[in-house]
Amino acid sequence: MISIILAFFAGLADLLSGLIPFHYKIDESYTRYIIGFAAGTMLGAVFFEMLPELRPTDSIYIGVGFFVFYLLERLTMIHSCGEYECTSEVHRIGWLPVLGMASDNIIDGVGIAIAYIINPLTGIIVALSVIVHEIPQGLTTTILLKRSGQGKIAILFALVAESILYPVGASLSFLVPNALNTVILAIVTGDFLYISASDLLPDAHKKFNIKVIFAVIIGAISIFALEFFVKG
Image 1 (cartoon, rainbow, N blue to C red):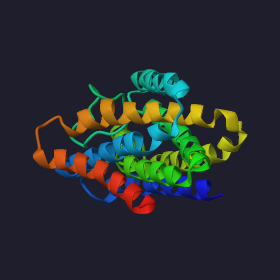
Image 2 (cartoon, rainbow, N blue to C red; image 1 turned 120 degrees about the vertical axis):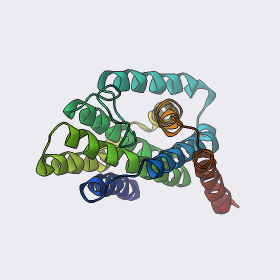
Image 3 (cartoon, rainbow, N blue to C red; image 1 turned 120 degrees about the horizontal axis):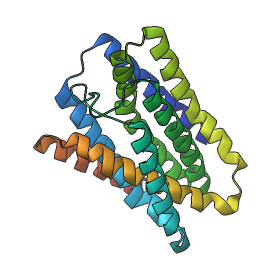
Image 4 (cartoon, helix red, strand yellow; image 1 turned 60 degrees about the vertical axis):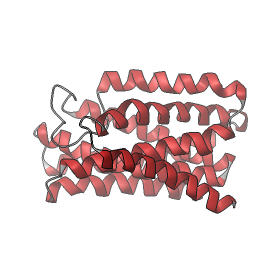
């Protein structure tokens, strides 16, 4: 039940961040800081919490998660970008990227729940990383659909649908046999590695900005500090 609540908050972060472009023009520099911090938290979750929970035999599934998400993103061109960088040359405009994001949300929901089953602290850290990551994703959903000419009602429908899929994914995790828990966590770990290292970091560093570098480092340190504080 707690894992579903954590997944609900991840979906809420997606929804609320998606509402921001309706009322405010997004400043590119602020977007970079958010993306950099999100990348740092995801990498911190991977290195400090998720990898230590895996068995050596699960390493192959990290690669599976990485390359599966690589293929998914190449087919749909999804994920975060600053408002001034979400162009048709970079991201396909329309519903296909939203569907790609939605499938990723189910994976994240499953990952939150499985991580919590393995270790409650791991589940909380994974959930926090997803919540931070959903801020740029929610922004991207609204920006892409606005540029494709979609109306406010259609965009709100997409945001709500994306948000619901987190607790849906968390609920589906209870169908996973316990013997496969670390396998699923390994796949989600590969997913996190791809999103953070191959998607978020390049977007954050399209222009050199020392503050963005600090945002990445602070994101990773915040995860380490949280883990140290709870365990210490």
